[in-house]
Length: 169
Image (cartoon, rainbow, N blue to C red; front, top):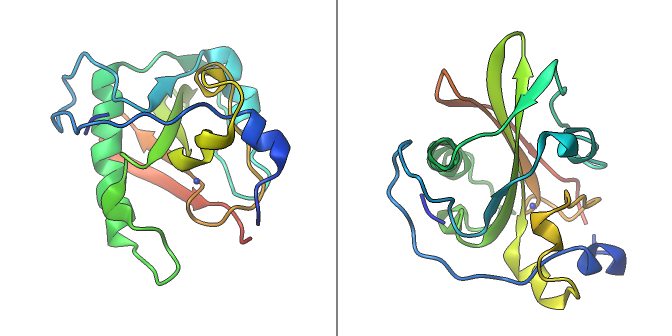
């Protein structure tokens, strides 16, 4: 497709501005990165995996740079997984990915390629000073509830292997 407590002011300053988007085709062959999504460099892996109120995967033995098509495939699988788990206090998952900012990194574990995604509500960005910082640095939020989440995708298997949500408010 085209194109996760109360938040501390420090977090708000670290986020970027919101962008509206239309949905791209749900294929793994897209060459255009979905709006609201960014692939961070492999050097970001240690930071993005240091989530403070949700489980995150282990880094593994290396990193790699996922393609736009692989991100599109991950987002289609994530949207289906989120809708399948809909719970009473969850956000409206039918709005994923459009209502979220998404940061991705490539991980290699046991010779397999995974993509880890860090997602948070895009409307949080309206209060930020630096509208592009989220495109350069991992956004880490403590608490925040299920609107803030991480997702891991096994590229070769084409499936979600982990979905973890931030703790309560």
